Length: 269
Ligand code: MG
Ligand code: MG
Image (cartoon, rainbow, N blue to C red; front, side):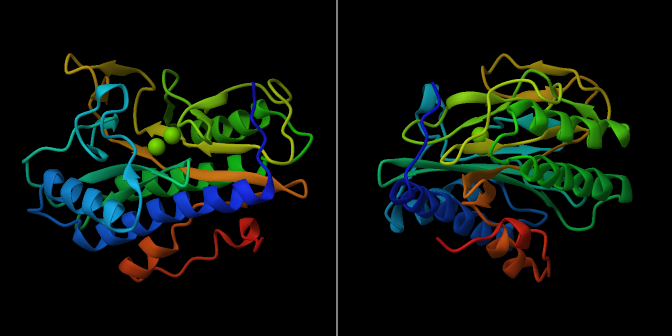
């Protein structure tokens, strides 16, 4: 069952989502060669607690750390450790916050130092596919319209769209109905209504779409060990249109990037 949210609930959800956004903005300044993912995990966890939230992934289904941090061929659910980052790495950081009774959950794939042109392209296309999906998050359309838009865009560029892991509804629980796959048929699935909140999250591989689930119970890598990217936003529907609850603006401030990509999905409410 899909839990549609009221405007006051959406305002609270925006606070949870934006605490994730600010945490990712803080980490953006720290991500460089030589830094360990454990360091990033500690910093992120402290920042969330200092700002009145709880790191939502810690203990969720038994996850041992604050954040999921997944370098290179790791798709998602990477466990932070003491291995230093290396120039040219891709680093996917997924962060969850619980605050005010609601969850925020979003993710960004960072470049570590200078990365190869083909890596840059993977990140660019994956992020663009996220916005292609968000564009479809409109009252009266269906979940499959989001799924199709993401799949079509990524496969057109020759990338593998992960099947085993999907986006989801978000609210008082981290994973609510409906599931939001990154592949699917136009016009299929549940109808999108005002008040829906979705975590849309393309997980896109440079090579094969196939992934491997590792024996630690968490880490998921690409089967061919080529890099993977993951971008995730929390999106709601107000007045029939998609509105972002999360934002990358804090990351962009940290990295000195100018972008208008969020403008069509930004609304004061
Ligand atoms: Mg996430
Ligand atoms: Mg998610």
